[in-house]
Image (cartoon, rainbow, N blue to C red):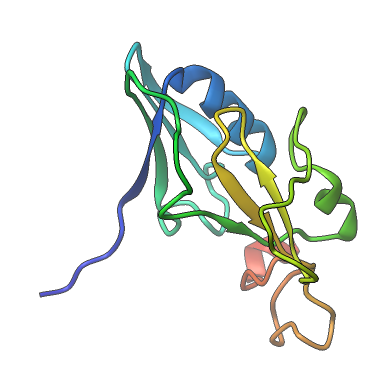
Amino acid sequence: MELRIQCLCIDATDPARIASFWEAALGWRRTWEEEDQVCLEPPEGSPEDGIAPDLIFLKVPEGKTVKNRLHLDLRPADQGARSGPAPGARQVSIGQDDVSWVVMPDPDGNEFDVLQPLTPDELPPGHDALGRRITASDRA
C-alpha cells in the first residue's frame, strides 16, 4: 500500500485567525473556508503545489495547554525571515539552549522552528535557496 500525507490538521480556537498568520508566513492561498475549518495550500503552479501537504485549521473549544506533540520546521530563503516570518511573530525560549534555529509561537501559542538558510554549498545542483528543484519553466 502506498500512502502520502494529504494534509496536516492543526487545532485552533479561531481557525480563520491562525490561517491568516500562516497564510502570511508561507505565502500560501486559502482554498476553502467554513466557520469551523480553513484550508491553506501552496500557491497554484508553484513547485510545492500538489506536493506539499495542505494545512487545515480545525475549530476546537479548548486552547493549547501543553507542549506541542508535532511542530513545523521552516527553512527560509534568507536570514531576514528568521526575525519573523509573519506579522506578530516573535522568538521564544523553551529551554533549547544554544542551537542553530529559533523558536517562535503562532498566535495560538503553537511553537515552530525557523532554521538557518541553506548555504550555496549545501544546495544540491539545480535547486533554489529553499531547496526546491528548479525546472525549465522556473527559469523562463
